[in-house]
Length: 331
Image 1 (cartoon, rainbow, N blue to C red):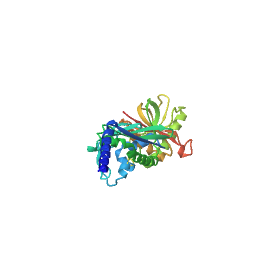
Image 2 (tube, rainbow, N blue to C red; image 1 turned 120 degrees about the vertical axis):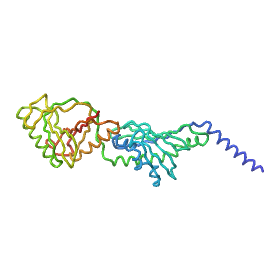
Image 3 (cartoon, rainbow, N blue to C red; image 1 turned 180 degrees about the horizontal axis):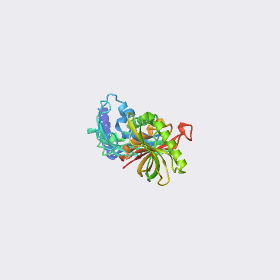
Image 4 (cartoon, rainbow, N blue to C red; image 1 turned 90 degrees about the vertical axis):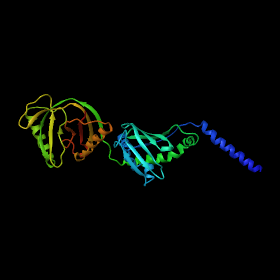
């Protein structure tokens, strides 16, 4: 009988302790892990900012191949939503509520009756790498079990976060290196140009002949170029005709002759991609400008795109060292 009484007192004491401890526990908790990734911040940011990309590296989605997912809202950024059902991971949803390109992303997690949480990512450039931090914050924890969950949050989530960050690192570092993009305001530029429409397979020959004819004309009239040669593209139709305007920037208005036209290249706000490598791979620069415009919700102006050939085959035999700048006008 005494033994039973003792066991009873012990159990009562444990119950009291279990009920009292949560009274002094905080009603919020946070766990945060980070990793260094050898890539530009925008490459890592885009993997997180598009919720469909989480299928490649999220420990929760990779941990349940039978998870049923649906997506709502925009493809990326604020308003993007992922809704899932999972027997092993539980049901829930996540919606991006704040997205600051290449710096920070915040999402609200909703686990139904199990409560809500704030998912936060930060991207901090460091040398040739970016430090990616993944934080999970829960608040308004209920008494008593919610507070116990908060107490064990770090031990429960740390392995999952570390696994996810490591997989994210593998995915990002295996991705093509992002091209450097910057926003600039450029001035109108007087130029001598040749305008025509050509088929894709004739483009190289047309550009070479145009540059030769322009250079010959400028030498004869002692006209100096004041910036790298360029080509403006008014459309892109690989199966049809492409409208092009190769040209040389010059100082002030110049006389025209035959198919050689005086043209003022427009000024305004532009996105500039700096690309180094062979010209046949320059499509990467155009793709990255397009991605940048989506990240920052920028709209392109109805003006031609132009490429500026800073270093090319005329002065550098190694194609890997060719330097081209790609310009897109934005509103």
